[in-house]
Length: 416
Image (cartoon, helix red, strand yellow):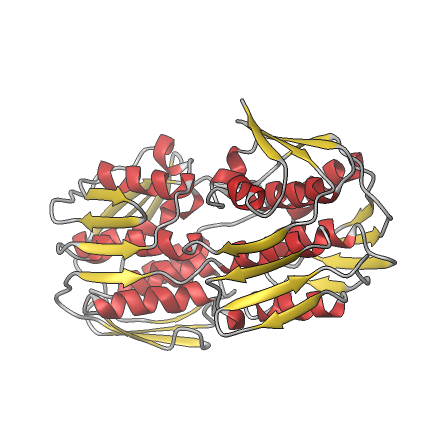
């Protein structure tokens, strides 16, 4: 699974650029199944999750070429077939092929997806929405099957603004017969990026970023060249990395509006911020002030930034609270921070963090993608040496994070 050896105590200084968004590229890759024409996407981050999605598309018969951050996908020869557990369990977002396959080919059979063990992420909202559009859904022996003559228009009310369900139903409705309305949808920037991609290939989608999305079904789609938005979670991680090391870093290739919830909490914690059109300068100013955080769907504070902020608040001058409202197992990494000297008590979905004046290096284990990032940040700020184990989690969502931080003055080495 790999390890990172981090010699802590160095202030990060310099400039770092944000890669293309992981949570935008994966659904857009799946959306390429909606057209037989070639689509080009850039800048595609070099992530393990991207490679797994590529393997999945190639298994289905698509031709995928990836070179220097540019990906070309041609799904002309795709033949829908049963997707095995081996492929599906390697990636949570693998379930996003369900909507496009059903929309274009009227049949799909996939195993239940995998991903990080951070809490319950059921498929029921996806399946209820597809059933409302006329699909016959089967669920047996760990597989989901769906078939239809052609998906029909529907008025769908999501019980929760699920990102995955919103994306799957948007894509399913592209080639449906008539107009589909999806209410109480997720509003994340990645949803807007998916809408822009879909409209570029000839779909008729509007409302992304609002409460309701309307999709007018079309009979034909084409190809496109599409530029991805920058990764707002990577951007937020860099902001916290600068703050936790009391450094000074300019984070470039960023859309400040996408990280406003994070900027607000960093300001509250006393971190110096200068916001520009496509960059943010971060200046650490001693120990941060304590703050209280509640994770919420966008535009609230993102659950994917919760572990990174907990690492920062572990060094705050006072007591903070963090309430996790999205994933019930998100605090699994807290025991690892305690090994480094953090004083954190978890009570249900709330963590009470009593700030300490320093953390100490230790051998810790990453439990999931964002936990890995949080532990790396803690290691950057800690005294002596930290070894973060199971860093394959990190490579699923961050492109060359160790190299980027080393370029800012960190001391990080990869171990086998």
